[in-house]
Image (tube, rainbow, N blue to C red; front, side, top):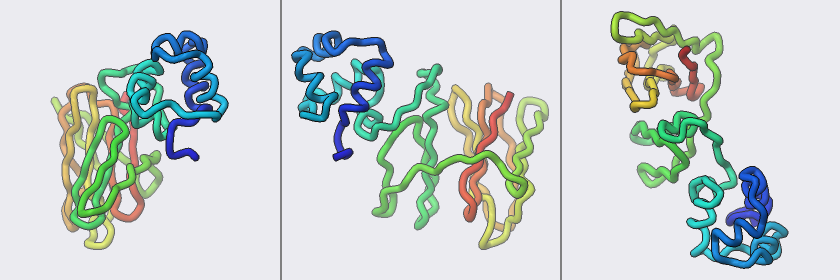
Length: 195
């Protein structure tokens, strides 16, 4: 039953924080035997304890429930938690800075998995005055094209929507840019980091 918090996750996170069962129990105002039961899969924490448990383990409720968390040294910018979603029906492009449940046109959208650019999706980034000129040598045909180019910094997201038969290029403000993303409608999301 992995639809709820599992004991293995609680134990792993607790030990990662250097906490004993008794220390975690004291923070949650439960007995250490309760924590032991959770960790040995002999019981589950009450739903009212999920948020305090997530806070005690220093992760989000969504991460605790999914068992998928990101260790991010930059908690304020959440760059490592950046997620992209594209609706296959209307073409909406959505971005979140952490785990989210995103739906559009009646569909729950999965987060896109960013890959390193390959030869057909090489991202070129050139500084030009106060901007980056981002290009991808990619066909821009009606059935196969780049859907968007985006830059992510600790200050926010810059997104440029692209269209078939247009250019596979965009200008993005320098502003402490960390990552550049390109999304191909056939091959998915690609990401490269900037120095």
